Amino acid sequence: MSNPAEPQTNDPIALQAMLAAERAENERLRQIIKELQRHRFGRRAESLPVEQLLLGLEEAEQVEAEGFAAEDTADPAKREARASKRRTNRGALPAHLPRIEQVIDIPDKICPCCKGMLHVMGEDRSERLDIVPAQFRVIVTCRPKYACRSCEEVVVQAAAPSRLVEGGIPTEATVAHVLVGKYADHLPLYRQAQIYARQGVNLDRSTLADWVGKAAFLLRPVHERLFERLKASGKLFADETTAPVLDPGRGRTKTGQLFAYARDDRPWGGIAPPGVAYLYAPDRKAEQPLRHLQGFVGILQVDGYAGYRALAERNAVSLAFCWAHVRRRFYELAQSGPAPIATEALQRIAELYKIESEIRGRSPEERRTARQERSRPVIDTLQPWLREKLALISQKSKLAEAIRYPLSRWAGLGRFLDDGRVEIDSNVVERSIRPIALNRKNALFAGSDGGGEHWATIASLVETAKLNSVDPYAYLADVITLIVAGHPQSQLDDLLPWAYAPAPLKAVA
Image 1 (cartoon, helix red, strand yellow):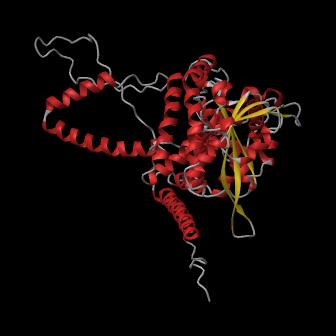
Image 2: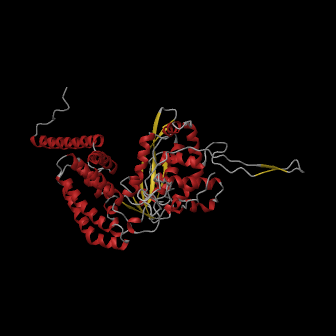
Image 3: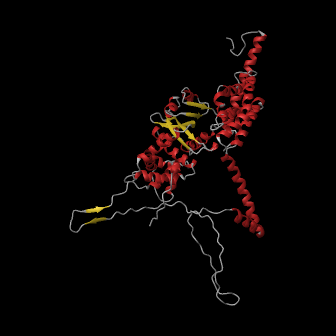
């Protein structure tokens, strides 16, 4: 039998061609292995994640603080100098926080010199931040019954207030706390149950899940209205990420999808409030964004996912592609070893990002003018350079794939040059995807397709509140209370996170 690894010809020219093809294939496989190794063991982004950088800084700052504490113990002068510096730089604590005054007075108000009475001439005041650990309390609702002495059958009593969980024990604020813990702080329900148990409140995980389900159903109209308002914009970002969902009967999970549609006009001075809406779908087929964005007219900024191209076939939607995804492919090659073409591509793309950093926050007209004058020459020279390099390398290599990626999307990648409202990349929506990934890492999977929809509903409101600097807990507590009390469905705009106005504080006896 012949060995399939042995060449089937002795022709020197054919053997050289076969050798060149084998070498190109080997290089391609090496690049794939390096990419998988970097994905498994290395950093996954072009830059060090902020969270990882902060972890490193935390450790360094703790060690430094320990050294300062030792110095302060040994040298009172240094301790006083540092204390004076802290008093100067610490700033004022928020005015809305309650103040509890502690008066530290002298025990004797007799003058040590003449024995006369001392009088107050002033005082020194200092403020320190104190924290009271979260405490449970019980709201007792009393509804007196009234009867008439003359009419024995008459009994008058105020109607019981509506509740999210009829016959249940949680207030709307308690449910909001559970929602924020799960969808903002990434605490699965079983961990929250453990936290509550430490304070003697035993709540089964299934009970918390029941509360979440009821809240998600109640908030669904607000979520739908949020997405309607976002779709009315002239420009949106879109992305998607996996949402593992338990697949009953099969003993494993299936892969659902959370599509994210975001708006953020702040980089060009737009007045529309930022927001993001997540929509759960059982798959990643192109029909999903087609269904979601029915009626949308404008520019959709996306990554290279082919499912969005069906939208571009409609005259109402124009696709703008993401330069960060282009950069990422060359970055992966440059990180794997010497790669002069990939390195030069990164340098050219860096010129575009430098220009963007300088014009961020300017008006669309100013951004467009700057891009036409400074960015267009870079892009106009980049395309022929990429084509030239592509012709010199093996078409099966990872570098060839990286080059073909932007060349096949060139029109969409250049769309930001002609419209100052368009960003150079889709990082806005990728940042909105990150909390979903964190929640997925902690919770592992949703319990069902319905759980995926709950995830989308509540996460949309939580993340939109955060984008508008609104406290998600206060927002959800007030909105749930308003809906339970019968807020009109025709006035849902008043319940959107950017329209939120905190309810006045009520004293509890």
